Image (tube, rainbow, N blue to C red; front, side):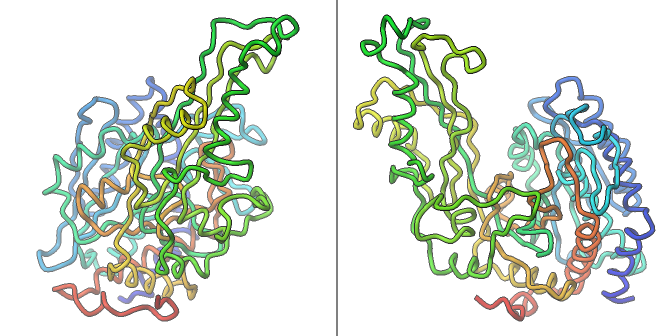
Length: 473
C-alpha cells in the first residue's frame, strides 16, 4: 500500500457517507460545557463514543478526572516502536450553547443537516468535526498499512475548552511523562480561507480589561443638573480614546507588541485576508498604519471594546447616570510584555486626567507559538502541498486563542495546527457548519500528513531539514 492508497481510503470514507454518519452521531451528544446540567453528556461523549472509537484504532484509553471536577479528559495511546516518532494530538468534545430555536429554517443544532455544500450542526466546526477528521485519517492510514500507523500516537480529548480549559494545564503537567512526544498536531479554528490549506504555529493571547467609573448612586435629572455633574459615560468614552483611537489604533505603548521582524513579514507576505460573500467586509482605514491586513490580524495586538453600559439603553431616562462600565480585550502576540500591563493602563489614565476610572483584569490566556526555526514547519507544509497541490498559508499564530501554551510551554513540544474550518463557519453562533468540499480535502490532508509521519526514519534527521518547494523563507 502507498500514500495514495491512504488518501483514497480517506476520500472514500467521506464519499460513502460513513464519515458524515459518524459525525452526526457525535453531534447528537449535547455536550454544552457552559451548561452545569450537562455533566452526564460530557462524560458520555468520552465513555460511550470516544473510547470505542479509539479501541477500533487499536488505542488504549483511560479517563482522567478533572482536578476541579468541572469536566473529564480522555487519554488514548497507540504504541508501535521506540524507534518510531510519536505525535500528540488534541481535540475537545465540548461545545457552546446549542441555541435551539435560533437556527435558520428551524434546524436542530443536535443533528447534522446538509444544505448545498454546508453541513450544519453544533460542533461540526468546533470541534467534533475537526477531531473526527483527524481520527478518520488515522483510520485510513492504519488500513492502508495493514493495521499499522508507522508511528506512535497519543490523543488527549478535553471537555472544558469552551469554559477556558481550566484544568488542561494541570492535567498535562501531572501526566507529562505519559504525554511525551516529538510533535504536537491538532485541528481547531478556521483556515485562512476555505480554498487555502493553512498551518498555524500558535495563538495570540488575550486579557480582558474592565473599566469602571462610579461617580454617584443613581441618576439625576439632566435638566436640573446638566453642566454641573460629571457624566461617567462621557468620562469613560474619553478615557478609552486615550488607549485606542477612532480607527482602532493603539495609543499606549504598553499595549503594543515588539516591532514586526522580517521573518514574520516573510511568512505573511503571500497571505491575503479576503472575506467571502457571507463574511463581513474589511473596514477601510482601520487598524495599525503601515501593516497589511494579515499583519494586523496575525502579527499585531488589538484592543477591542467588547461591551459598554451606562443608564438604560432600552428605556433611556432624562437623567445623568451615576456609573458607566466597559469591558475591553487586548489580543496580543508573543513578545508582548503583559506583566504589569494593568498597572501601566491605570498609571496612563491617571496621567491623562482620569484617576476616577477603576481598572482591573479578568480572563487572561497566554500567547505562544512554535519556534520559526523548527524543521517540523517545513515538513508539514511540504506534506500538505504534496497532497493538495497548493502551497499552504503558514501563519505565525492563529488570530484567536487556543490552549497552545499548554503544549508548547508546559510540555515543550513543537506545535502545528492544521485547521479544517473556515472563517464564515458561524462557530459559537446559530447555524454553525462545515463545508463539505473542505471536509473532504481535510481528510486527505491529514491522511497524507499521518502517512508521511510514518515514513520518517529514526533518528528523525534528513527529511526534517528539506525545505518544501515554494515555501523557502
